[in-house]
Image (cartoon, rainbow, N blue to C red):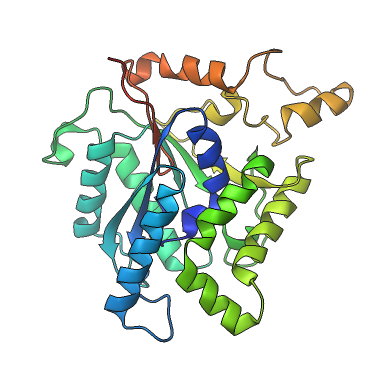
Amino acid sequence: MMAHPDDAEILCAGTMIRLRDLGWEIHIATATRGDCGTISHSAEQISAIRSLEAERAASIIGGTWHTLDSKDGKVCYDPPTLEKAYDLFRRVAPGLVFTHPPRDYMMDHEMTSHICRAVSFLYAAPNISSLPLIPGSSVPYLYYCDPVEGIDPLGNPVQPATLVDVTNQMELKTQMLAAHASQREWLRAHHGMDEYIDSMKRFSADRGKLMGTQYAEGFIQHRGHPYPTDDILKRCSLISSTGVSPVFLKLIRKHASHRVLPKGQGEAECLAQSAKSPRNGGITRHWIPKFSRTPPA
């Protein structure tokens, strides 16, 4: 769950694509419709435009877009917003959640992070929502994406604990971000260059340098009670515990003591093992804001 349309495309679309390629269903949720992302349209006009852009971006990888319909600059941790978020989580039964870090450059991001943490913790409680509880619902894996530009609000660098190689997914990730044409066109007119795309690629390249790849996305896993503490992305061999890709790690393993996944254990095998996890009751439902497999017949 992200704050605005285009946040997921910037911060975690490459990871979404990798998991999509393994057969996972994708849902992208935003707190707002992006009603302040303009200098020329009314709030109603830009909301309609950006809603269509968000739907189009998600559809590129076969995903579905949802919104809590809050307003830009007014995302608030309050009962009405929480109720919308609880209902959304009840409808999709997330098992893996990506959201903004608790501290970021703007309050909409921080509030969305707090909302997502609260709702992921309690959405499976029977009395929290009037919507039916899907069997297998439980406290999901929770990951925080990188803050914008990789720094906290005071300008201090934030080091990701998990890095996912998205080099092969960059072309499709770029297509998803480019679908948000209203934002791209405004920045091109304002900056005189395609800064919207270029800045995303620059930051992804900086994260890629940390793991010896061209592009990467960074995350920090929430491991507080009672969240799962094993790194599901590592288990699916997307990353290693240091953020170094398994291939790159093999080149330097004689200088390190980090554990590598067993030889031959690939992404599909790891995902299949996750699908059989008893904590999900045999039903695999993941959130990026949400990835999921179709429940077995």
